[in-house]
Length: 122
Image (cartoon, rainbow, N blue to C red; front, side, top):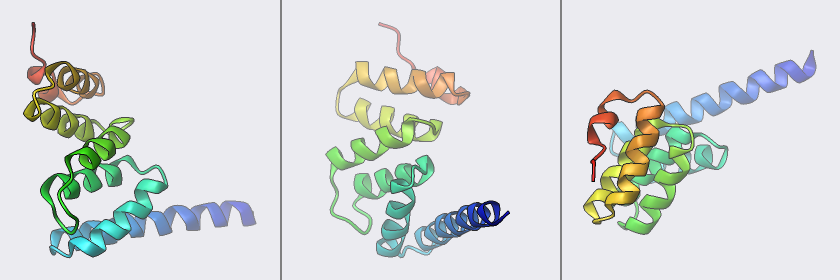
């Protein structure tokens, strides 16, 4: 029973960290959002990894860094379709059509319908 309570407490704590990070992001406290999203990303939270990618891509609270944005979008894309769309969009901006299509295709397979229309046929 103790193990179950500890597990539930950890889940609730992580949910609170993500929610707090999201609130910081909404209120444009990007440094705080970065710190909290990074903690969550390190705990395999794909949505948090996506947010870290957004922060790096747009230089919000961190120095803009396309390479790091790609890295975190890829982490998020492992299980979060929106991260795949962001990854694909950034790859497309960089001229990497093949990589963009891979990301859009993965998002499409995850059920993100808009991504299906973004896949370019050769």
